[in-house]
Image 1 (tube, one colour):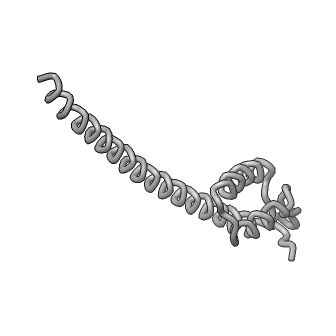
Image 2 (image 1 turned 60 degrees about the vertical axis):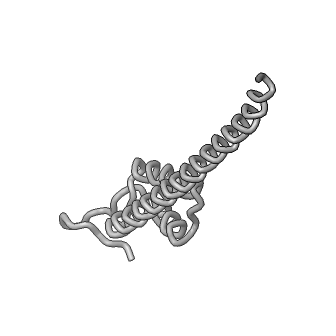
Length: 113
């Protein structure tokens, strides 16, 4: 009787382990796919923000220090996620803008060209 029990128990346990292993691998793959999608989505959002910041401050002809600090954090995260395209060029251009607004003449800003 005991021998018959062991004869059925070993394949049952082995099958359970294989099934559990399959479920774990499947969950891991789904989690990896979701994680990759989250990273790519975050990278796209950071890229869009870098572009938006460039357009905003390029038009103003200056970028305040607090905005440069925030932009640096955004760019560092963007770059860590693998981003390295036109946003790098725009980041560098934004960082090279002066930190103070152009001087005013007759109540109007002087645009530097």
